Amino acid sequence: MNRYPEIDDKLMSLEEAVKKFVKDGSQIALGGFTISRNSMAVTYEIVRQKIKDLHIVCHSHGQALDVLIGAGCVKRLEIAYGGNGRYAPTCIRFKKAIQRAEIEFEDYSNYQMSLRFLAGALSIPFMPTKSGLGSDLLNYEGFSERIRKEPKVADKKFTIMQNPFSDGDDNVVLLPALTPDVALMHAQYVGEDGTVRIKGLTFADIEQAKSADTVIVTCEEIVPRSFIRLDPDQNSLPPFFVDAIVKVPYGAHPTACYAFYDYDPKHLNLYKKVAEDDSLFKEYLNEWVYGVSSHEEYLQKIGSEMLLKIKANPVVGYATGLDRK
Image: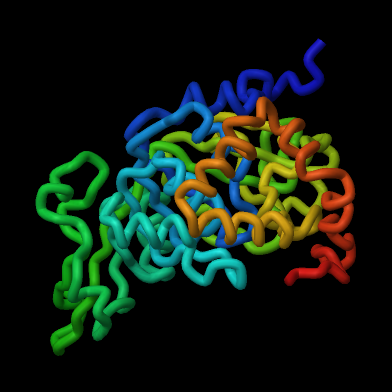
């Protein structure tokens, strides 16, 4: 008898979720932020399945973005910022791909990207804002006219128009909505009815999920309905937004998952070293992605000692005393 009958059709393995919903050329919204709550387990599976030509959209990101770019899965990117904090103020494989013109790239501000997802979530074609006026964000475009004709790419980076409710010189910027094919999200909890609860900062995850056609949620725990109904104002998404649920403890590693575990400084330092060198990065992928048959095997490679070191203090939500050097 299935333990979770209400979400039986949504419970999947990583392999099943990626194979069913992520295709070559898909536009993918990445949840999380820099080294916090990245959907790493799904990212590794996308790489293992050798999915190509992805169009990545996110307001700011880090480790998952860098791995996808470094593994050659990304063709096009729209983003505000990519970095791994102290370990890489600018993501290393991301930076190399831009410098080598290996991917198509367009940049917006954090606020602008958030507004674009909000427009998609509201099912409106654009969002007006003052953000960007007077900045070089409106002076330069990364996408060529040829790229602008591709599916899922806006005809223009933005449009400036006169505020129709003002008689004076009052310009506003119109930003095109984003409606990704798939949004990836890692959450702390999913209820047995499919309700998603993110603890801590949600970044742009909620808007991304609401704007996307399909939502894949990996989670630390699947919890009883009685738990998810406690403090209902803490819940993030209702069940009908979610298409696939994968229980993956430590599914954000080596990034942090608030209240469960901190980021892994040992692994991020390793990544920083190998990402600078093409051959070392290939070896990294062979060892940590292609050479790992399951997420459980991946955690065995990390080791119980390190997993205990990054385990979060339940009071503050992060690992106190962790050596972050």
